[in-house]
Image (cartoon, rainbow, N blue to C red; front, side, top):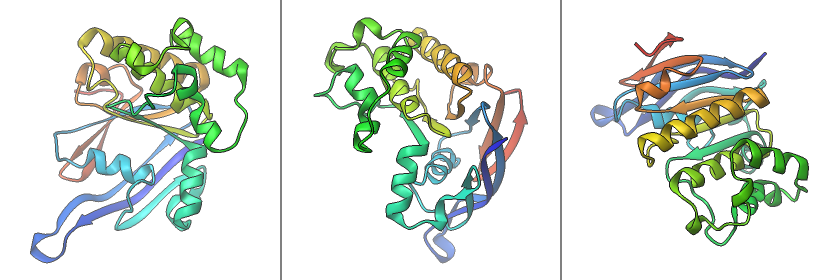
Length: 227
């Protein structure tokens, strides 16, 4: 089942001779439960692609469909609600709320949507992510790896169609990077979660199902290898 369809996505900044083509006719799709990595040099268009797929940035042209629903056929308010309910985000800098503990940060997207958290799912996620004994700790009491695990839990809590991870190990040392990646993979497999991840780390990209390379705004599908 295709969860994500990206069709002829273009993003141009500026006009005339100074125009920058950040994305050029990018097209690909992802199946349910697939874990893909987007690699490429700085400035290649990776973050622009992720932001457009997540509805955080408007493409110049093209379509992004999640289970058949076109993100950019909606009005901004509708798109914001759809994004909150159907797309989970994991950022390099965690973006946790400092006044909330681990569990509260994880369930925050549900509370924003006036939905009651499923206590069984909360407990299961805390267990899978190794955070059960940290559930009442504030972000200032956590290591970098624990903060990113909390962010992963928050992204998975709403049972989103798609999780977008922007350099999720970029602020972590090599050991924490490996641990966080293993946990993200484990959670993805357990929940059959579709994940699209940006990374500069080719070692991390070697463990995913598929690698997509962006260069000068154009996308190349490398299949199941980062070589």
